[in-house]
Amino acid sequence: MIGDVAVHDAGRKGKGVFALRDFRKGEFIFRRRHGKVVTVSQIRSLSAEDRRHLCELDRKKSAVLLPPGCFLNHSCEPNAMRSGVKVFAWRAIRRGDEITIDYRLNAFSGERSSCACGSASCTGTTTLDFFSLDRPTQRRYLPYAPQFIRREYRARKSDAGVKRTTPASLRGSDQPTRSASSSARRS
Ligand SMILES: [Zn+2]
Image 1 (cartoon, rainbow, N blue to C red):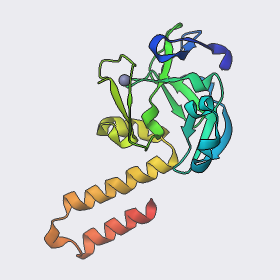
Image 2 (image 1 turned 180 degrees about the horizontal axis):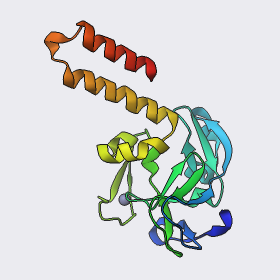
Image 3 (image 1 turned 90 degrees about the vertical axis):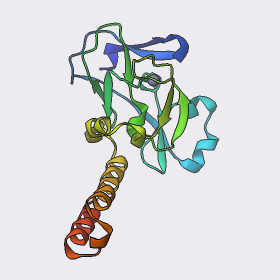
Image 4 (image 1 turned 60 degrees about the horizontal axis):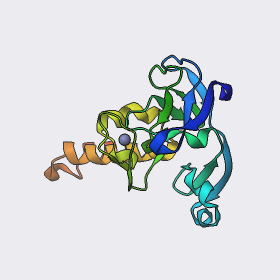
């Protein structure tokens, strides 16, 4: 619940969201509220503050996030996960810990951004793109990713499958063609 978290200073990262109690792995933490939803062309008309708190809903629309959810910081090794607007514990969270999510879950811009998350695997820069994650992480995140990311994941996977498993000399023969087109229809 919103009463279980508080916003306060998170050092170099500005403000952050902190746990006011312990959370078990998998436990629901709070719901992140969306303000107005804008199209890509409307982003320009937003205030600088609103532009800092955008969440991509798909390739065409973004939502302006409201407090406290807009202050959730990114971590390359987050302790929370998001599924739509629901934020839940990805691992056990102790009271007082900063709650972090992985911005790459729904990102596709490929923009490189400096990262101050301080986690062991952080290189100091993060690429804002789901597909910049390593494959095992993509697989773990996939069930929580928005539709448009899941669709692209399946499309990329079936492309890779066709290329990898089908020698050029066999392409166009019945078996691989049928399986490639049926997976394209599914996605
Ligand atoms: Zn990082």
